[in-house]
Amino acid sequence: MLSLRKLKDLWTILLFVAPICESQTRIQLKEVAVERLDCQESLCVGLEYPSPSEVAFFGENIGKKLKNYKALIIHSSRLTNLPRNVFQCLPQLAEFDVLECELQHIEKECFKGSQNLKILNLGGNSIRKMEGNTFDLSTELEDLNLSDNQLEELPRGVFLHLKKLRKLNLSNNKLKIISLDVFSPLKELQSVNLDSNHLKELPRGLFKELRLLSVRNNLLERISMNTFTTIAHLILSDNPQLKRLHLTGNINELQASNCGLTSVILDGRIISLQLENNRQLENVRLTQPQALEQLHLANANLSSLDFLSKATRLMDLDLSGIEKLKGVPDLWKSNRLERLSITYPMDMLAELKDLDYLEIQQEKLREIYIKDVDYDFFVKEDAIKCGHLRELLSDTGVPKDVTFWEEDSTLKCGDH
Ligand SMILES: *[C@@H]1O[C@H](CO)[C@@H](O)[C@H](O)[C@H]1NC(C)=O
Ligand SMILES: *[C@@H]1O[C@H](CO)[C@@H](O)[C@H](O)[C@H]1NC(C)=O
Ligand SMILES: *[C@@H]1O[C@H](CO)[C@@H](O)[C@H](O)[C@H]1NC(C)=O
Image (cartoon, rainbow, N blue to C red):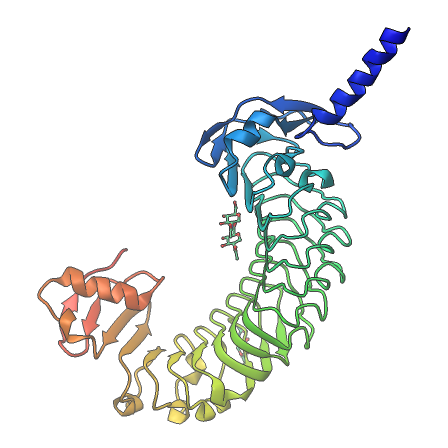
């Protein structure tokens, strides 16, 4: 009797001493110890825990092996459940990435001990659902990437404890709706990416202090007027359902290309406005055109642009493919204009002294004239000129026929 009790006491003591890396959660999933990890520095592959009823946990030896790394990146693995005790084993981790590992479930307990975790990247997994308390213990997070998952909704309060969160990437999910209170506790939030979801509207009044919001390629139908007081970059392109836009805030850059816009009214200050390929766009009104530096309106259905006469800081203007503007007088010449794209050449071109890039698009032919190219570039080799041209054109392809304004030489450096 006596000896058996002693044995039991000893057992209890052992249980208290041993589980340095074990979690203390009620066990619903079966914990499976990870005995070895195949790692090159902090990049680890080959964790195979695909069973939904099992969860990996890191043994002590792994804690020792990786104790000098601030980041742990797991890929080429299968982990239906996020390993349970990563941060109890590796409390020094500032970044944890589990990329393309078919991850589906995250238990709240996984973040126990994550007092140094600032970056969490779970991009490219199969997360469909999260609990409202999933991130309750990862309170130090600044950058959370959940892009390329299967999220259909964000539960209430899911980000409530992420008071330090600055960047959130939810692109390429299946979000249909965002409830009012999801982002409001995040006072430090600067950048939110909601590209390629199924959102029809944005929650009202929640983005007052953001620097960047990108909601490209969704099903947005409307955006309420005072959603923003100030925002540096607002990206709304590829929302074919978006017909009207009336915003009151100050915006540095607004991109709303390839939408179904018929009318755009901006009451605040705007510096860069990109609205190309809104083929039904008949009305653009800006109350503070004096701040405008870049305006792209290619292929709109506009017949007048009254505010342009006041846009004296304009440097970059694209009015190509606007048939109805053909006969408009040169109200819109800004003496700072450096880049201009139009369909029909106009008389006033000679007056634009600073112009160093002119693009004329007619019947699918694109001609580009470049003036004031740094003289160093006027060397014999076409490759160098083409390289410079590519830089000037940034992302778009270099067209086949290119004429240098100064030299009148025709170059062929097209990609297609
Ligand atoms: C977020 O994850 C996606 C998908 O894995 C990746 O393409 C993207 O670069 C990540 N972003 C950051 C900031 O890590
Ligand atoms: C978010 O993820 C997408 C796609 O996975 C990536 O293209 C984008 O750069 C990321 N954005 C940010 C701000 O990290
Ligand atoms: C362009 O505007 C005219 C009216 O000015 C209208 O008749 C026409 O249908 C519009 N085109 C498109 C593509 O919306």
